[in-house]
Amino acid sequence: MNHLSKLIYFALLSVLMSAPAAIAATAPQPAKGSAAKATPAQAAPVASPAPVPQQPQPAMAGAAASPFNRLMKVAPRRHLPPPEDGLRDPTNVETALLQPPLEVYASLPKSQGDLGNGINWVAALNDGKIKPRWDRNDPTAEPMVMDMSVVRVPKGTMPDVVFPHKQHTEWLDCSNCHPAIFVPQKGANQMNMAAIILGQKCGVCHGKVAFPVSECRRCHSQPKQVAAKGPQP
Amino acid sequence: MMESDLRTHSRHRFRRFMRAGIVSLALSMLAIPFSLHAEYGDVVLNKRAEKAGVRPVIFPHWFHRIRFRCKVCHSELGFEMRAGANDVLMWDIVNGKFCGMCHNNQIAWGPENCDLCHSGKQGLESGIHGGDSTMGPGRW
Image (tube, rainbow over all chains, first blue to last red; front, side):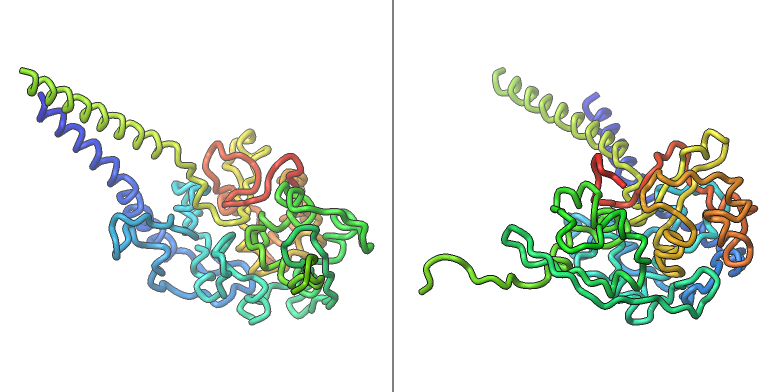
């Protein structure tokens, strides 16, 4: 009885532990088979930035256990191909035709915190790694860039915020932010981190598609200009 | 004997401990939300899709932003920058509005490729997925 119950526990445990590995091992196979069948025209619509064919999977995508210390917690696999991403239906044949993120991310500059996509999109655009169209139809259209930075002085001890119009106008149109989200007038926009984390003001994009608000120093980037109060030595 | 009683007691406790461990392990594996792996900025559109008998739509922001600036969709195409604020009907897309402004077989694949967009799992909730960190009542 005693041995039997132990055996059953062991079997249960081993099945539970091996389940994710088994899923990971079986899932990519149909993807590869049907991806080979797909024509490039179907898989990538326009101006696809040089697809890298069948590169070896980087370390952050593979590895079920840390090779250094098998007891160490392993970071969850990120940027999984569409059939494994948890949102898309792997039984859908056309899911396998969709472009896997790592095919593109491998050549893009990484962001420091590795949060969000883990990609520094501003650097990717500046370095010419990606060439997203400014106009839907015209691949040669150039953005209307406004180079004006706005410095905001927060009440607390955090460094001043520098808002660069330049990087924003490379992606966006004036009407995306003004006047609905930000009133285009100095001093007219009261904001605080709580509102931003709740998804207002900067939080409309930052934390959803643009770099997350947890990368504090990308906005709070300029040391405070005022001298500290108190007795001077 | 006292000693053997103690031993069986400790064995019992060990067994109970193991059982609890296994149960909690199984529960935790079930409870892991699978959209954890979704890509940052993936949007699920499921206001109407499942009611109409098709899979939910997955809109990947990353895929679009390497090809187009934000402004193209959020200004030219008329998409509000707020999940849930865009009432996109298939009829509009076929008639060349919203997604249909590019998904027309000229710039990108046409609307007859249903399953390329309608590729989500059943029962997904509409909204932004993939590790978004802003939330709350002011959710845009």
